[in-house]
Length: 360
Image 1 (tube, rainbow, N blue to C red):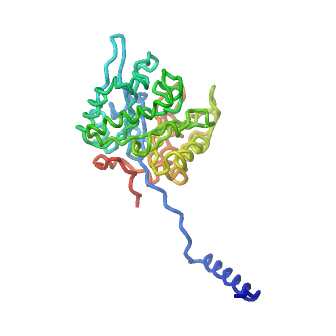
Image 2 (image 1 turned 180 degrees about the horizontal axis):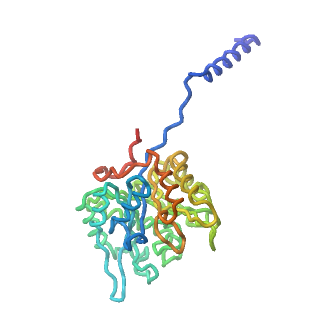
Image 3 (image 1 turned 90 degrees about the vertical axis):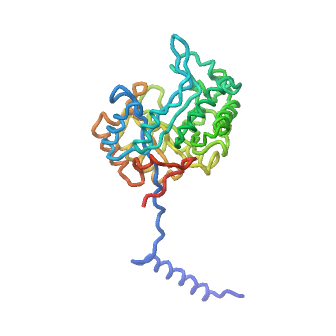
């Protein structure tokens, strides 16, 4: 059928009229998606009372007072072994701190590393080939059985920041006698032992470090696979102005590149946790950084469903928020939004742990 100029003109006018009607007062306008609900919490060091949470829960109550809201996640960790002059002792499944967290109403995030403490000691007996050989199978099995017996859901963040070169379990070729090709088999090996004894209350969190410039081990080669990972994760810090640092960086500058890599290519269907995040005050505005982080996470990082502030003294960088009034105020403002859920999850039963339901 021939389209005449008059018909084209009338069609264009009709489209223009429809557009004007949509913009008229009272017309329906497409709404932005509301922000997701998120778990939130902290890893709290020993700087408040001389003992870290959750072995001592007083720091948690102090942190809650600062934030004006209960924490829904509390993070802590332990290595395979504690070593001293008398040798090494394998660590036990930490029932007491886990119970402290659950009774408070939060979900434990337990970071467990295939290493020995102190970290500066000889770690060759705990490298990836040693774990893969089965040397620690009896220990891992006993640990998993204790987890099953405890019975409550918890996040298990195993061998985190594996794409870096600074930990003895690193998947960076040559570190502690490891190779990148060994990391995934080790992860699957440990996961399979948990599965074989029925310790399905562990939610497995795969947590690389942010990679600002692509200089760390490629994430795709270190990802154990969808059936072995429940949540993805990132650790990242704004180190500010200090030797060896890239300088003051915004939250986006720290996280966006690696976040996009994981959520679009490596594991697009998994929820994500930020398990260690903090900013110094050296070189910029820490309160503004904190408020921007909590706003950005809610609105721009839709896959992130949990965020944990690293409230620990670490190598002279002042991550904790409790020391300066302006930091405390900023944190309280940032976490105030209803999307950040309080300590209402002590009775959670689902495993793997799902993201929190959207706050109404």
